[in-house]
Length: 170
Image (tube, rainbow, N blue to C red; front, side, top):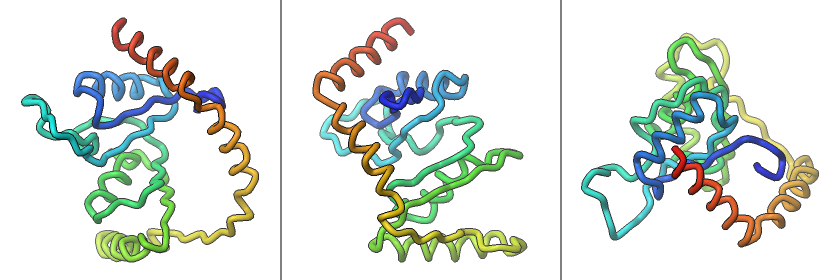
């Protein structure tokens, strides 16, 4: 994201709870335009007494989320509803874009059935499917590859040092 001058941050379960909360607070205050989050629990042999849940999915107060993009389709209905609900808090509305692989299609069908049963008064389909050909995204692929080549060990190290400095000052 940095390559495209997009103000973004990363939120994952490897970060201490206080840092996760600070990151979300800064996102909510507009410091970042995009937050890249993983709600999967990381497998670790070491657990903190104060951190009963190492995932980032539950109990975090994201505000004013307009779009949720699922690069990995959630593994169960509740996870999908929870992720999608990030952009539908209160009177807010938003969009959810989910990339679904062939292996994930069965779960997508279950999610669609659940949502259709939950919102029977909806006039149109809850989930709108869009099939595309890979050729249609070729230009994006090349731009993404250019950005990926810029992600070197030194660039990652510099980004991490920048984050550590930011954490220390906060």
